[in-house]
Structures are given as C-alpha cells and as structure tokens.
Length: 397
Image 1: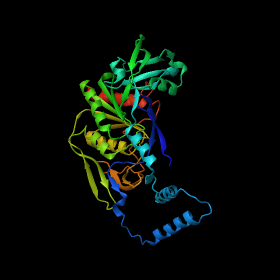
Image 2: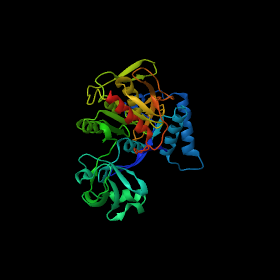
Image 3: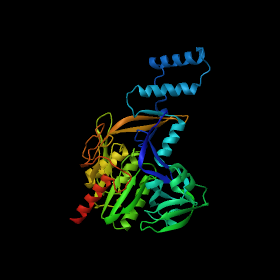
Image 4: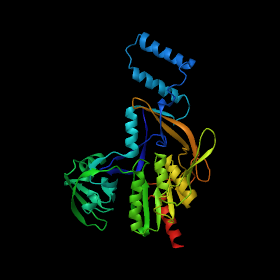
C-alpha cells in the first residue's frame, strides 16, 4: 500500500534523515491490541461463509492460477477496511509497519550531527549542530555556511550529492569549509559518527527567544524535547516558539509527555469512545519549563498528536497559535497486530481539547492567522517573525 508524503520545513537532517515525512494518517501507539482477542468469533456467520466460499473458488477453480494467497488475503482485508469509509482505518503489511515505525521514530544514520537548510547559491547553512555531536565538538556553529566538502564547491552539487558526501562510515573524517556570519572562512575536520534519529530539536533565537521544532511524535520525542528545553532553560530564554508546522503527528502518549513538560496539572485531551463518554488523558507530573510564554506555529500539515499538543498548550498554558488552520484529525486509532506481522489501524475514538472542543475535520484556528511564506526559518518566515514579536512584547510587559 502507498503512504502519503509530506515535507518538513527544514531541507534535511545531515546524518539523520531526509526531510520527507510520510503522513501515515493515524494517531498510533495509544495501545496495541491483538487480533486474536475475538478469534473465537462466530465462524457460522453467513457473510464469513460467503467470503470463504469466494476465497476457495478463486484459489482452487480459477483459470488464472496459481495465486499468491497472502496477497489475496491482504487485498480482501484492505478492501474491507476501505469499505468503512474512514480514511484513517488502514491495513498495514509487515513492510508497511516497518516503514511507518521508521518514519515516526526516525532512522539512525552516520554523519556529522547537524541540522541544515539550503542557503543561496546551493550552499548549506547550519541551522543547529546537535548537542555533543561531531559537528558541535569540531566547533561548527549555528549560522555557519558550508561552501566546500572535501575541497569540492557545494555550489556545484545538488542537495542529494552534498548530503551523500557528508554522510559516510563512522570514524571517517569529512573536511568542510565554512563561512561565519562575519565573513571569516575556516576549514573544519569532522569525524563522522552514528547519529540517533531526530524528531525534535531546539535553538536560541535573538532577544532571548527559544525555538523548539517537533517533526513527529515517536518513542524518543519526549526525551529529545526535554534535552532541547534543558538547553533553552540554561540559556535563560524568556519565551519559546514551538514549531509544529508540517508535523503529521504520531503516538498519543508521546504528545501527552511533551505537553506535560510545560504544565503542572490539568488535562491533555479527552477521549470519546462509541459510548460517547469522555475519558480524560491527564497531564503527567513531569513539568520542566513552566510559566514561560509560548507561541505555537501551525499550518494545514499540523495533524493528529501535533494538534493535541497545540490544543492542550493553548487551553492549559495560554499559548497563542500563529499560522493557518490545522489539518483537523480528531480521531484516534488502535493498533491490532496480526499473526504474520501485519496490522490493522482501527478508528475507535475521537479526542477533544481540554476545553472539550472537537477538531475533527475542522482543525484548530490560530489566534493570529498568517498566510504561509518561506517557512524555512529564514528572514522571510513571516509566521515565525510574528511569533517572536509576540513573545518579545509579552516579555516586555
């Protein structure tokens, strides 16, 4: 099956992953069920008998034999789920499951450990070296522009070629020529290493404003957010911009842990099952940065667990939202594992914000609506500039 693709605002991660993120369209990881829970269901069901009759006819009497029986079963399951009319109820083959997990949690690569974006004339600008990573240890700073890789001009390379040249075997050295913001040029030798997947990172912006970008909600997201917040707290930032643009979501419990780092108590979201009763998803007692003004960047690619985060921090922490209306995925899916490693993602609940507002198919409307421009974090990123300006005004009061 095919997964829909989306694009993050940064061009790519050096030594981590390319920026293409697959919008798998579900909030997974709320809990894992077993398809065998109802294995004793009525096998005398007439519809099931009809299906088995059709299956045996196709596999035993069709002129166009032989068939891949597993493929037939997968197609039948896929068709049955499609017949529900719910775009988020999906069948995942074993390989689909592996891809989905990698896209939520990231894939480990060997590289220099830096987040970059493309700059003018096909150059690479260092957005942030990862704390304690190879680039940071070699003295590379945020804002450095890479002009040469192993003596070859970056301006004569494609993005993919430049990334490939920076990637390499752990322990090998890549020599970079970088230009500092004041114009000084210097050569830096960086020893490549295995870099853990990145789903979030932070940096300090001018005027004591912190910036936290979350790309997806995987197993390591909460810890990476905590590391970023530790760095921002050490820098004594007076406000934080949380960038959730083009964030397709991920695990609900990851969103719960992220929200819980900003608030002391309260509700992250409410879950509403088929019985229509509301069950609270509480804040976990793990606050790290509280009482700091927050501005959240959102757009039409902000979905699922990212919308849970934005809605919770607006309701619980007074955060203001900047950008455009979010995707509007207010449903939750449970994951049921099948015996062969495939799985079914089944919609069984809706979620509501702490103020009990549903965002299903309507999304979150920002407090300050700003049409998208350049969202790469550069000078023309109007949404980011507006959020930073808001935090500066709040801090000045």
